Image 1 (cartoon, rainbow, N blue to C red):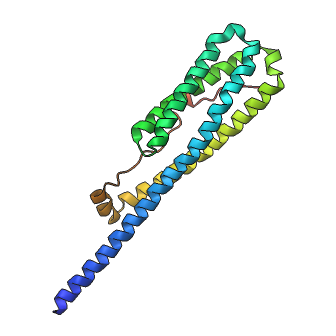
Image 2: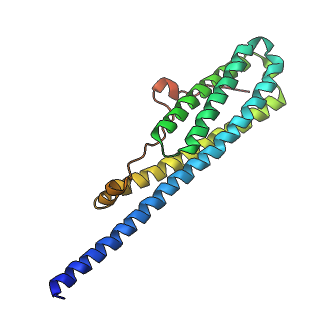
Length: 197
């Protein structure tokens, strides 16, 4: 075997080992993104489990506000369905978009419920409602932290998949960039409802 053939084989071996390493890194990062979504999923399920309890406590005081309560439950069910779809496909932009839209609808319905609660001092004073509201607030914070971790992992994955020379392996093996989660799309939606219980 000639020196040239030996050099070519050595270069090919290095290229193959590098490609395997790049593939393994991209897979590890993709799995981290899926795991990060799993953490969001856990917190969203906790949130969805709290909402019916909150509505039941409010129902005692708000019998004539049945439409508001039904809207919260309908929005919660829609969000839960979208969450299940996203959990089945945590790397799908369409599933994540549907989840984000359903979460916005749920946030609006909860905001309207808490605005109604403001008009009922006896409901605001209810200890069960305060506890549920506090639990919901803590869960919202956990969801926010989990979303941030998810976006951090997506950023790391996208950086790895889009930098040269790893982009060659990424394109050949179908590692496409992933979308980050965005909480809201407009400045009006970014305004959190003010609730004091």
